[in-house]
Length: 286
Image 1 (spheres, rainbow, N blue to C red):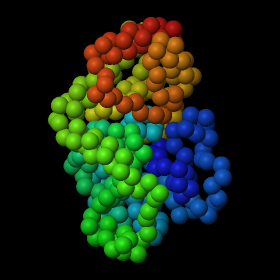
Image 2 (image 1 turned 30 degrees about the vertical axis):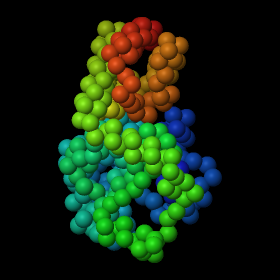
Image 3 (image 1 turned 90 degrees about the vertical axis):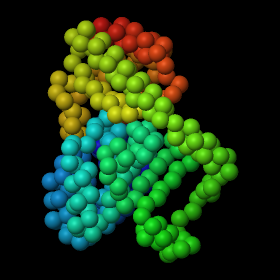
């Protein structure tokens, strides 16, 4: 259920895009490119431990979205992230947080700050540049010192350090130092989710919701959703009808039930009210 980019070794399970179309992985990935990638269930620490037991000292790292945003929005069970940290530390593997979605969306220090877990490495996406094509990764000094020119691991890109992207990134980060930004994001996310849940209840439609910081998700399902297996059982046809109804009403949601939704500082009370009115009208047609 987690997605870590369009790298062949990470397309063993290709994420929300092909999941929406019921495709298990991405064509064109040779078996050898992905044979060293193991897949475990999110929120299932025993499944991760079983892989360590099976492969002993051959696991180099565990990479995870600390809040899964590619199967809707699923937050970590209590103790799951702590368990991953303990397990990787005991087995001599690195813990990598993919915070491309959660970084600077759920809090100023991302999900790791929200849950109090410091991974060995962290990845960030273009949110740090206000949408400009920029990303970043970082971690413990002894790991980062392995990167060239200090160490033997080569990493470079044509746009690395692009001046415009760097200026956009610095400006965005300055803006995000204001605590009021995250208060607004959290408030708007909860308001949208509450509006959605209320309209579903009024229409007699089964709906499950999840929210953290500036991220939220929802499922047309009778049961709570805590894993990819449970997310797969949601009513995709009803979601598609809701998506197209909202689109006709002027609200553009992610076109997949497996993609998280985001709020921004551009959203205000009027947008929440418009969203609720549209959702109420569409829910009655489902």
